[in-house]
Length: 369
Image 1 (cartoon, rainbow, N blue to C red):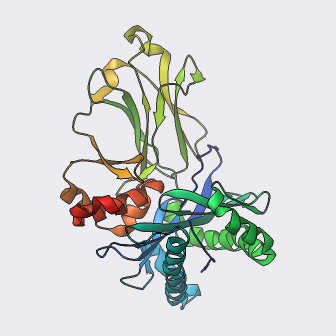
Image 2 (image 1 turned 90 degrees about the horizontal axis):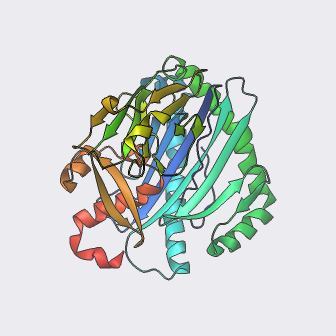
Image 3 (image 1 turned 30 degrees about the vertical axis):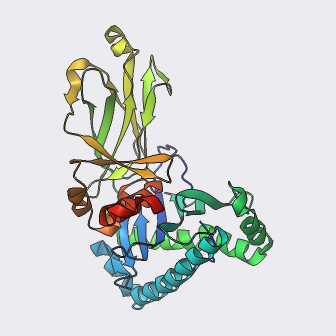
């Protein structure tokens, strides 16, 4: 278990690049929080190809498998889960201490504070190419990330310069981070792929359709039921990819282990006579052919029941949650499985979700956030 030294920190998210060749990934997401009595101080989730395989939190203090095939790990390593639990407990204590350090440095004395870390690796089918990442954040803001190409840490905010210089100077830390990303992580990923090959090494084709709330609203091209999660989706006009008036959503997991995503197109400035010039393109890792769907009025489904739940994020930003109902109580019950919360939504929204829970339980304390 990797147990990183951490000061302050949120996740830096990169776009998903499409390749027809199959790729596999292993990543861990750690989140520590203070100021919320009804929420675990620390939550850790492990994912293989976007599927949750491990869960730990500070209440249970135990790493548990989330897929049946993950239990096979103990056949080769009987102490595997005990080792994971101990390592995550040590990381938990480190993270909680790091929040206190950050609060002192930023002169914070109260309120909800979130400390996050994401790290992992990606390999192709031939195990010839390895990509990896490690990034950190604090209270919904990017803080510092490791650049594998330069073998240095990058700091998007000036508050991180001290940490960046310290970590760049620590050659042992740089070497350990690089070794984990390029050697240890891929080795474990290959083991997990062996254990779960019947579930993980497969390709599920999606259902693709158009959704529109009203005749004047944007059209969503929605793909669901696909696997693996490494996919790309975009709009084309006259055969050329377009970006103007397009809003791309995140890839989200379904309850059956498959995934869904959408990309929206604003039709307000487009004549209905020109609709035939537009098409939605879906690309999935492992598939040689793109799935192309022409925009035709008769293919559009009405989507009036869909809504967005939102909560204020760091005073300025809004974090959107796709939901079926607007009632906060129902929303919180719907995602009572914390492991599901921490990989179902875009990572930068985790901070937002925890704030939502805090405000729900403490409606009189909005002013301290």
